[in-house]
Amino acid sequence: MLHRLLIPSLVLWALAAPAQAQQPPTVRYTTWMVVPGGSAIAVESRPYGSLHDDYTYRDQPTWSVLSLEGDVLERVDGKLGQTSTLAPAGPDPVLLRLQPGNNYAVPRPEAKQYWYVATPEAPLNVVRGFDALYFWLPPGLSAGTVLCHAFSPGEAGKLVVSDLDGNVLADLESDFNEPEALLFRAPSVEAPRGHLLQLSLLQPDNPDWTIDDAAVWLGPEIPGLLAPTAEAAAASRAISELVGIETDWTPLRDFEGEESPIMTVQWSKLVEEGAEPPAYDVALSGEQSFGGEQSLRVQMRFPDDYAEPWQQLKLFTEPLEVSGIRKVRFFLLGDGSGRQMTVRVRDAGQEHHYVDVGAIDWTGWKAVVADFEHATRTISGGDENRQINGPTVNMVVQINHTRDNPTESVLYIDDLAVQE
Ligand SMILES: [Ca+2]
Ligand SMILES: [Ca+2]
Ligand SMILES: [Ca+2]
Image (cartoon, rainbow, N blue to C red; front, side, top):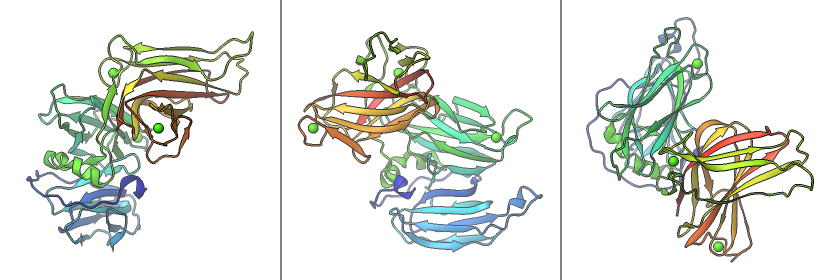
């Protein structure tokens, strides 16, 4: 998992800005933080019985300091109910891995700025929620998602995203027995450096529910860092770069207006004569959107007696002006159909680059990222220089159908962006 979080690079950064007084969150299981080197971190171990006097866990609490390359620099076996102090040497930022197991930990860094990691791979495992943590929504995103999973029945929560003036952008109260995403729209004010937003996880209003254990993470489109202050959230960009989270996306198409950027729609396989062809309908739609008011609606429907073992729907964009492409990202409203998807780029030299982006095994909006730099990719034809060359490329979204998949899917695509 470390490799997904980290990239080897070390940079110094200045510490500034005062912290706000706030009770720090209580964490459980395994939770990661990024903290500045050269300042101490007090980690308090709390037994499970401090909140629940009906049970005792003997789990050994363990606190580790790791370099951003993933090397363990310090490891402390804590004592249940006692506070340990970690003292990473400065000045480079380090990762803190807190493993209280089934018991609890309350970390208190001495530094003014620090960050809780809250990614799909490494969520913040928090106990009884938190009033306010802050995050940075990078420029170019008109919306984002926050996810929560409180797997125990009866345990629930209320997620609230607000701006720094306390205006609520979106909220969601749920039992979160399965992971659920809260979709929020960015404030409409111009923000060339991105938005700073506040996240709360609160006691639900439903009197039958209580808040206890919950995993919280930011959608993959947002650097997965939650900070104790807005000032620290403003420094998330630099930290994101240190831990290998990309933030520089160039928006290409938002699927607003009248003209669809999809130029051609095709099935991969021809249908035998006399057989009923599968149907598709691909058009801009106001039914759903990730950003703005519209998205691309993609419907595909197969006859019940469809005999082919597989088929593939291919959506070709119009020429897109880019100098090159390292990554492609778009948002997809999934239907849980399990259909496999591939993103292809045909570059200006007629070279085809393919990356499989996995199965649509989710519902709701989620970022889909095709990494043409690092992921396993197939390249064929064209100028054979194995690079995606501009000045224009065509992108192709390829959606598979096999006999295991349902006979109908309705998907929505929005906010196509690239890293050049
Ligand atoms: Ca629950
Ligand atoms: Ca849109
Ligand atoms: Ca090429």
